[in-house]
Image (cartoon, rainbow, N blue to C red; front, side, top):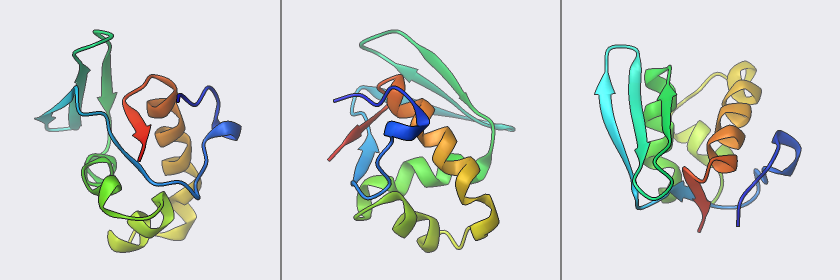
Length: 94
């Protein structure tokens, strides 16, 4: 299953980092490389990196936002970033 747009990213579903994606820490956040489709993504926020790492440990993205104590005013930007990662198959539903 792959999301294709922000509007199709289901925030009520549990998501996780695809097992064929590796994260390389960088000062700006991380580089994410998908070994299957050979895509590279820049995670431009340390908070986004932390979120992606714990996403699969929570029933849905918003529970992960709460676990990281992310400011609710930033949630929509994180949902947009997660939707883009899901559309590129960097995230997959659990």
